[in-house]
Image (cartoon, rainbow, N blue to C red; front, side):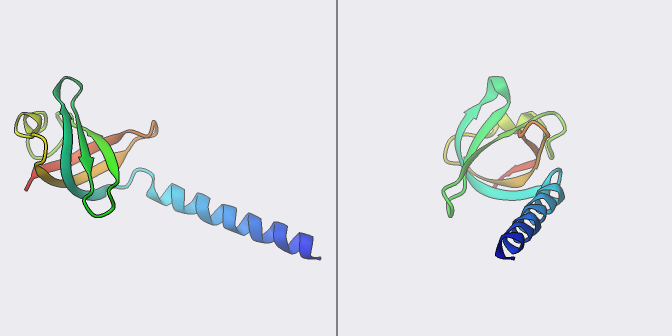
Amino acid sequence: MTRIFRLGFLIVILFYFLAVGVAVAGDAVSFSGVVKKVVADKNKVGIQDPETKKRFTVIVNEKTQPDGLKTLANLKKKDKVEGKYNVTDAGLYMALELVKK
């Protein structure tokens, strides 16, 4: 009896995490942080959240608001930024918005 209960509980937990993952994929995620690195030739900006110390890289393209690729020319290490990104199917963080504070 306990073996069936454990299996059922495991299945419920698995479905819960799958449902949460599906709801999050493709949604815009807000962020703020400090620029750690700008790689202009690859259109990438490395950012670190000062509170959690989490580091991530967003890719900037012509669709990034408000200035698209012009945003990269205005950024340098230690600038404070905020914006939104979208996670692609390949796991890349595409910047939807990127603004220097």
